[in-house]
Length: 387
Image (tube, rainbow, N blue to C red; front, top):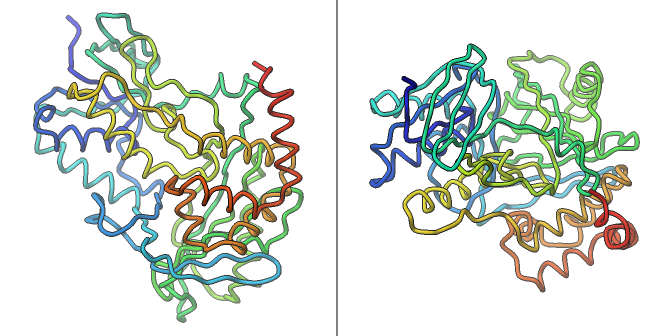
């Protein structure tokens, strides 16, 4: 007889573990039987998550570092500003995994299976996971966070960009960093026909993450990312002697493709697969928490449907992705206009989807108009008719 759970969570990354954490903290759901399946045992520091937040938040206990100031740079100048009322916060993957796994160990109704998933299927009555070893497990509901971009890549209506990066955590003997400020975007690096920038998170005065990031359709050879990081450390940061402590790399999809929240009756998509990644920035962690809160309300029976991110901000994101897909070299100019012609904190409000329509109009009018006008016309008369 197949083992049965109330919930199976396919994928034990950010979305899966945030959901487990929320289930354990909920008086209605905390006793539900849950199985988490992931091919990794989540014992390594494989990534970091950053987000901006006002005041205290639910993950402050494991915040590795936060910053009260930010820096925006381009080839002409540097802008340093106070983020108040926000703070820019960072969580290390390993700290997040340990925190949630410690709660799992204290609850016998939560289990973890280290396995690779082969398939998911469901009908109106039951959902089933099959692992690569042909183990079959049933549940009332499967929460799926395993990305599948095959349909996204096939579609022509919603272009797909990638936020791809390699980062080095470096350590110096001398104090070289201002650890009160995060370099949010530095577009002073050569653009080479793309949207390219450096991102610097100083953990202390002699330790920082230096990351080379692109918003573009194609990945680079790994060597090119590392050459640019090395050049930036030497020329811009003026650091000659340093040790590389850690490396990280990733590629985050940037698209307004309408990911389905619910498929096959009893499979609920979460995380990037459920549309939690903000298309225009690639930020995901904070939106995962917001989407999880809606899922919990649904499971409690407090709402009949799971809310989606279908709002006017999705259309703003759509136009930006269209522009960057057609004219990828315009990214630096667009972001420079936004930060230099507006209160930078208001841009964070805008990216956080917490602005009024009048504020949004002012912000959009501050960006280069011709690329967006062409994008609007192409969207109306061409892209909307694609499949």
